[in-house]
Length: 294
Image (tube, rainbow, N blue to C red):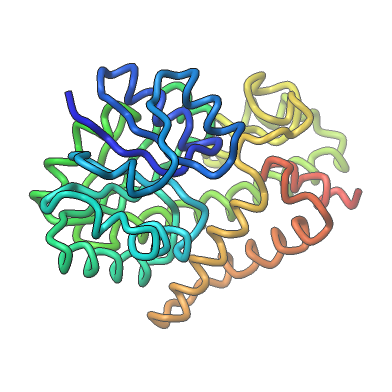
């Protein structure tokens, strides 16, 4: 099995690194947060004190970080690209802007490395259960190398195309998710005011033209889907602040290429209000409270 450097051990990265250990890989892990480091150590990762120590002699380097500047800092300032052996594979599973992802591909190529941008869908629960979906951008050769590593952390690994296309797929997917969640919330609130029971609307719409993931799997009211965050006081899950980040990335990309995304813009504005009201740590389905007016 491979020696894998894993940088970024948060709510997503920590469980992903643990699943690589379960798959038999040797994982050298680094993070700046002591609690995250402790959880990774308990999961069987070898803890190191720097990015340079993590990437030394590693065949694959996985990063799971908050935003593009953090990834660039790890690649360049912290020395991941200069410290890894030539030909190493870099898998960036962070969700960042497409332009930054393509720039990082260029830097990796200049350093003699292979790279894929491989953001994920499935949230913290999917990271723990190893059921994530990976959307992978990069060359055919890099994808072939990355696929077995990603399969140890997820159940679906799809090659989205060339450099940056994984990030493009992620922001488009999450724009659909943000828009659809708001639509589901609005319908449920309207049903309340019309005297229609949540369960009755769920039973009807989940089996008719209103069917969608935001309703069927992640229903934003307690009851119809017992595993949804609505039944756990809207604890994430997928935090509203992260949804807002992705919607903003989608809007930035739309402006760059001249795409018209009025519903995406509206969703970004509504989640901006929700997060601005101090609800960034609430699951994104909790926006139903704002739509109700409380």
